[in-house]
Image 1 (tube, rainbow, N blue to C red):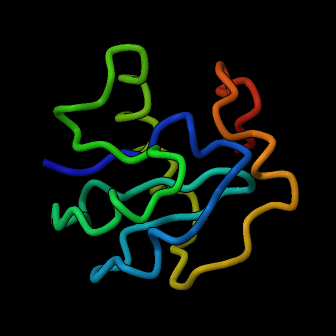
Image 2 (tube, helix red, strand yellow; image 1 turned 60 degrees about the vertical axis):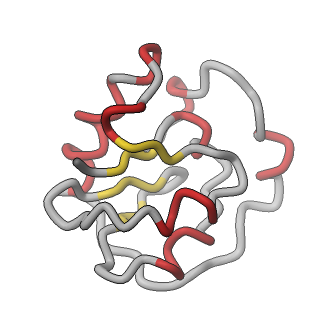
Image 3 (cartoon, rainbow, N blue to C red; image 1 turned 30 degrees about the vertical axis):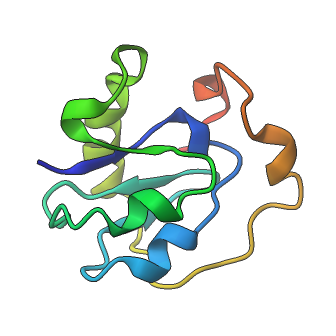
Length: 107
């Protein structure tokens, strides 16, 4: 099983999760992070670090977020690895809890 980043991360992109990852499985896009399913070792360390609760075990991804399983795998192949924490977007807090953010995902 792998872990998956879901819609809550879009336009927030807090990177606290990156600091605790022992295998560097996070990849960074313009306004979203993804987890490479081929690199993730299921350690669970990132889950509690995410301030917007965007990270789920693959088997626990909510039904309405299932498309993010394939999206993480796809974008991890295209986006560069992120190795250290960065400051969140200046307006990240304003995006916390906003529904239907997939339309704002920048590829």
